[in-house]
Length: 343
Image 1 (spheres, rainbow, N blue to C red):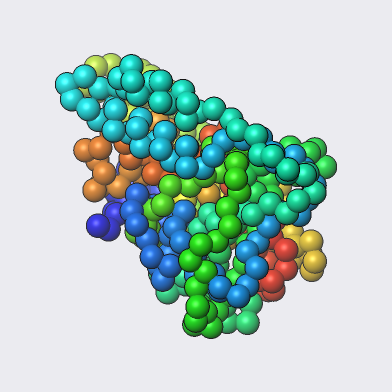
Image 2 (spheres, one colour; image 1 turned 90 degrees about the vertical axis):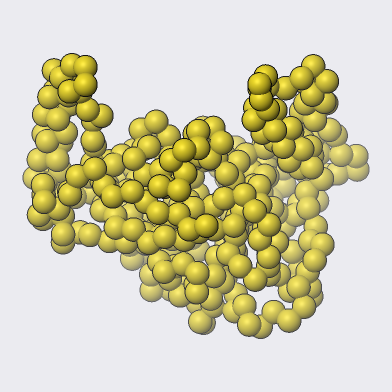
């Protein structure tokens, strides 16, 4: 089933005609639980990885001998999802609670050294043919594959994330690896995705307000303040939900490709290529939720009757403290190292 973004509550270009000069597009991926094949774009599905090519691993030395098993995490999610759908008495039974407690335990992996290579988790793969806003990769590559380490133990702080993005030409893969190596345990359940098929939809988007010209940003802020005051003075049936530029009119939530990055947690930060110094473009956004209480106007029409707890977290991926990961790429040389920001 396709997914359709509802019309925006207001025509933002009618309010601010200058925004037409900054209009862009982004492709909402709309991941939903399913059983994807290696030949399609997916989150948490099997990857089109050559049988003769080594699987990506984390080589940074860090402890990875203790954590939870991925199979236990998947099973725990299945039990909880079924329990809360149960009628007339939703929620886990006493027997299920005991099982959930067992599944939630950490395990120690014996004979594992901090310097041993750790298989990365295959997070997603994206084919250009499926996703309008996915740029061409280096040397005509048409497939982007995303991996990450399941432990927060990297970078100068020793608590950072490790990403590994690979481009490839899909038509060159003749024999696919069917049983790739997996980490025995993971440090954080949010790194373990549930298999999801994608329903790409290209929508209009506009830049984060703080990156617009100062006078235009100021006018948007003044308009939002006036709208909030008007809503606060309304009562009863005359009261309306507050419409905001950030949450309703500019950047959609959820997994998406291309468009503009949101900087709602930190101030906007220059994302220039570390190799050639030119400004990088947003490649991919990995989000903890497809929408939330502040961005519910983006909930697809096909999902309107579903409660948020059933539909807003299909991938079960959690970035940081329920944030989003924005990954940037060099527009001139896609093979240059990527950069990212968590918001």
